[in-house]
Length: 134
Length: 127
Ligand code: HEM
Image (cartoon, rainbow over all chains, first blue to last red; front, side, top):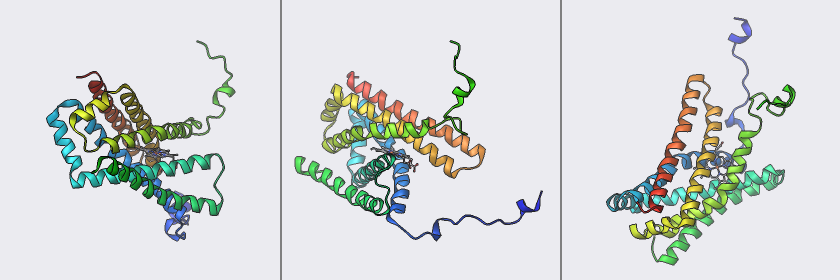
């Protein structure tokens, strides 16, 4: 083997040397949310299966989803989903070569986070107001 | 049928991965179709959380809800499979592991989709 392949070679700088920015945080958030959604969707398929199976199965699964932990998971999933959806819309805007300027992309990143929290609260607040309970 | 295209025409636009921009394009296509379907999905879940067995089955048996729910699963499952493939390709470099995970990445969405579509059909047709 030639010497050059056995010697330690310089590596390109890795993540930790870059200054933290909102766009960077939202970029990794898009990947993390996509992964969480990927696995979590199984829960909704199982919920449908329970509804298709029998009243007992449905009441059991729906009971789990209605428990405190279940509600936190569903609330969290909806937030993650909305976050990823808004982040995805941001990607689609970028695909049209708009919104890529430094300041605009920074603002979009912050809007993504704040928007996802607001929309999630509005949805569950609305559901709560209409039905008078979660 | 005989392919009348010239060899050059056949490979144009495919690039070094032989897949061209198809993966990227389908990720975008499903991202767009996900938007209305996911808005419906979130609205449905928020509206029917805490409802009874009868209410939820009746809602899911409505043709429009059943169709939108089915489409939501198909669009999202296809989209998430494309997305996860990119994640695997980014982080998993051993050839064996990569192939195994890409296989699992096909099985998982197909299984989730089979469960969801079977359940929706069964509810819709009153089983
Ligand atoms: C609601 C509408 C949605 C939109 C608009 C959307 C949009 C996008 C876009 C544009 C990308 C590509 C990002 C890139 O190229 O870096 C992406 C990636 C991804 N999406 Fe979605 N998505 C949506 C819903 C979902 C759902 C429901 C799931 C899973 C159940 C999901 C899972 C993923 C995954 C796993 C990736 C790969 C992430 C990565 O490569 O970093 N998406 N999404």
